[in-house]
Image (cartoon, rainbow, N blue to C red; front, side, top):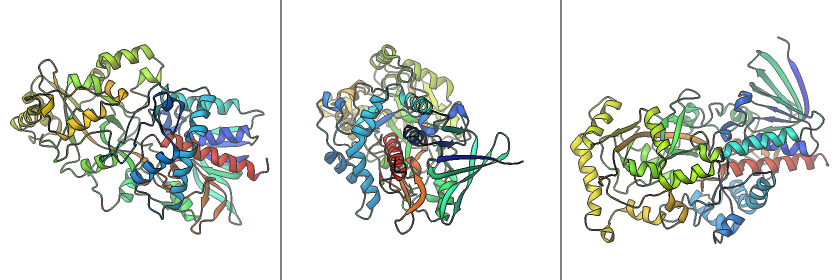
Length: 539
């Protein structure tokens, strides 16, 4: 079939948050924009459309109202230490500094001005096993989740389209970048709906195609050799974040760095209503649940507890003999602490149902627990530990979990409570007590009690496994989001933003994120690209 041709000042490849914000800012500056995306119009927004909406922000009015004395210097110290960024990570360190210095004005204030708001509590995540993570709470949650954020950005992008300067092409896959005399001049794409080839011409091309590890093949190929690799994983990323354009650009001289650094999660379950093959949901594990190996024994010697070091948690799970672990808890714990990441299962926040959110927070989220028990075979419930062990074995098709071992595991933990609160001697209980000192965490964390406490049942076992999420590495960029070649020179006409750029510099987070750095990273890199594009035109 004959091809169609589109001409614009700026071509944005990828309709996720970073691509949408880039298009928005370029339109506001008077540029014509073509935005091309592989997905359908209903799924425009990429991973951000389904995300929870947490953001690590520094020295905000909300922090100040909670009497938190944060600053860019404190945040940068935490960032570099926790991410283990070395002195040779020049560009990632530059982007880390840029992030902490600009997240307040260019993300928090900008989103408020854009008609969005945040929930009135700052959460404390990624504290570090030795207190080497976030030294104070920074995790802000968008009221309405990331879905509201994404839809608002799309709305503003459409509003900024004065004079029909915006063309949005859905279900179009970019197959090649076109160039003339070493300068990129556009791209060639395929319209999957019609089978027609499409030519996209532009003076500037912005790569916003997401990360790499939406492809299990790429995730495994780039997995660091010195870290345990599980035999099976779920996909919590976007299936179109497959690295194809990364390698295409690398063939033109671009540099992929830190490709083995990924922000995965330790507790995934298969999505009950999968959007694609291998689709997983990321469970936010209960702090009070016991993490058990495939035999029903507590993983140790140091117990696994969520909220302190996700990077380490993932490695501990990946190192297990079998590619799954069990979470042992009871109904009392589940209704207070259980949550799932993303907009889909956080409807009270997503749909602005404040009163229902407060009710479920204070009285327990029976609705979510019942939903997952009903929809997912990986959530098992029984009145006895022996009955639970039988169901655990039936799920995996073996007899690895012996009822007496599961009983011994629970008894050993519950022994902490026989002599009163003052004589607890368990690292998990110490971490729980530490978490409960911060008000928002106290609301979502049970007061420690015996697992077999009367009236706390029934018992619950959840089978989970490692789930991929975001790429921390990507194509190398400078502080203007310009794509760099092997000599550190900007490649004419090429920009890269968001996860495709490792959230800046090809890996701004290093080995670990302070959590919540991804959505702001998309916004900051996108706005930097737009400013550079506009200034380069003398506007």
